[in-house]
Amino acid sequence: MLSDRSDDLPAGSLTFRNDHSLPHELALEVLDVGTSRGPRENGHETVTGTPDVAVSERNLTTTVVAEPGETRTYESVFRSPVWYDVRFTIDDRYPGEDLARTVIHPDRRSENQSWQRLEGRVSEAGELSWTVTSTDNPGPFE
Image (cartoon, rainbow, N blue to C red):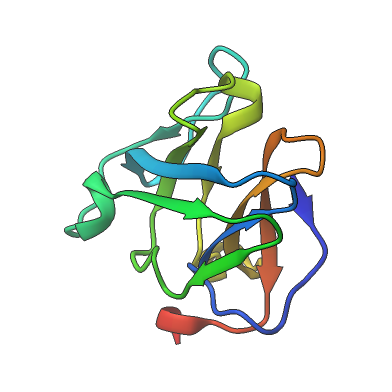
């Protein structure tokens, strides 16, 4: 899901947002990194190719407990100019490929596109979703 531009947060930032009336544990895991967007498999996008640079975020996992109405943002989480295949979970559950998995490439200059950041969100109904948002702030990709 690609949304409107956000000029405030730097590229590669990760936000967890809880709009539900209960606290939730949100987690993100980097499943793979690649040099390009791969084919769709089982309802989600993939990455392909082997980056020629070391990607310290290759094994990144993070978990937060977000209280109702809470938003937590971590700047410059994705710092390498590669494609990331990521998966979200909510309360230790994986809601499925189409709802909780996506790819992001925070530094899109090579394709004449904007920089990107990622948000995992729990809706007012308690459903997990994700959003890739464009930003004018290049963050670590200046």
